[in-house]
Length: 406
Image (cartoon, rainbow, N blue to C red):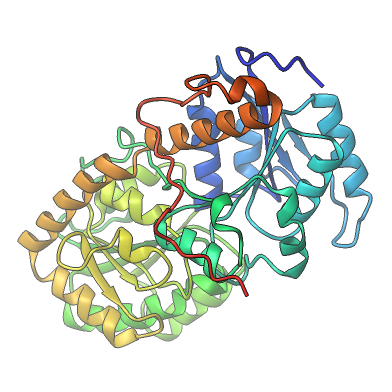
């Protein structure tokens, strides 16, 4: 392993399955790009293919891929161990649950990585932790939740020790996601300048419940003739959703945009962002919309109420409640001043609490502190010697949460 001098760069390996265009993957891109590269040397490991975002990062950072050939490929442990040893990693951060969380932490322990961290981004299926992953809790130095309620979920539902659970809020680039020209997407789609746009930004997967979005769109369109609907993202459910839109008579109202590189410009064009998921932790799409000055209507799941605050930044409805979604969306679409008020307040709150700088600072501070404690126990015991990260760091231990282990 490398020298343990506290003033050298720490090699941090982020381990995931693949990097398609999605919320958690975009967060990872922004995180590694935002890190202080005089203090950290980030690398990416994709157990399967790198995906579009992995290929994008490969021009800037080491990206390793194709280590897992099948679900039951146990040789992935040897491949990961060999890679971690050759790269002399100081910290391994698994991103999400499933195979990468299990094999990544086990390989990191065998490779004697000083710091092992698991960052989670969901509160249930399809990204639940599972029994095998819970068995590796003693090997793990920290578990990261993306919001206070998510940290509480990790303690109460996943039964991780309170002292190992940290809340580091998701963060977005507020210079990139900001209010601006709202016409480009209307021009692209050939829509009138006064068309009202309701968007959803989420991978086209079952848990995102785009079916409810489409059912609500049919009712909203009947009430508001100027309304159009844009679906940003791609995934396995696309063909079924396109068929459903056609069956609902929405072919000329619903626009499937697929994966886009110009998401900030699209969000600026929206009058309203919707999120209709069955479960979430702290969705990045909500933060991006609020940062762009766009109010949000979302299902009340996971940590969503920490960002979509009724009467302040948007409106909530119960998961699966089409009528609740429709009523909330129509209310906001018919009240321009209220949309402006919610959007302004939403951007203000993102600037204060969910900035990219705060998220990056939180990760950096946690990694440095744990590395100091694990690799330099004598040095770390001296007051003032532990690195503290940047002044904007948001690192929270969720001290108010009670452990309910049985």
